[in-house]
Image (tube, rainbow over all chains, first blue to last red; front, side, top):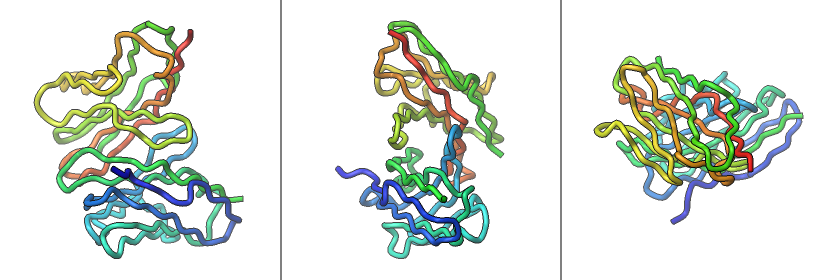
Length: 113
Length: 114
């Protein structure tokens, strides 16, 4: 079956612009996670959705970052007023309720110039 | 709070040699432990996981790991390295208090020499 997909695969934007990153989880997976991976580091947790609601957004670095999952499936990570320090690979993962195994998408590489 | 330490950011082995990638974790409650592999420009693929039960877990591609509570370790091993094993490997921990949120180590890059 289809895995987790993320679009776009690459995004280059100018400092100060707004970007949206999309994640399409595996069908039927109720849990969805966003992570950010900077060069030479492991993924860092940003936010977790259970269904439509954000169950834990403690990893969002500041109020420029926001994520939604309005119908409990596709999620969008939104970054306002992008900064060069936001450049990273943004990873999305999904899992079934109660499962410990997360399935990761290929990521979106964001470059802020 | 959870944390993961991967000892050695780079490990180099010869083809056919033993692979040993080290991972130590910190968790105040019983942990769930994972190893992921990441190939260039790709997402993370789960190699193996420990949740409960048998402490020696076997994964894909001939990898295995042993959960040692007394040592707070979950080292990854493979008896004989293959060129295709060259990649970056991440150890991660989660637990029931964090709703599946995982904390990752900084990764170990494995190089396999012919």
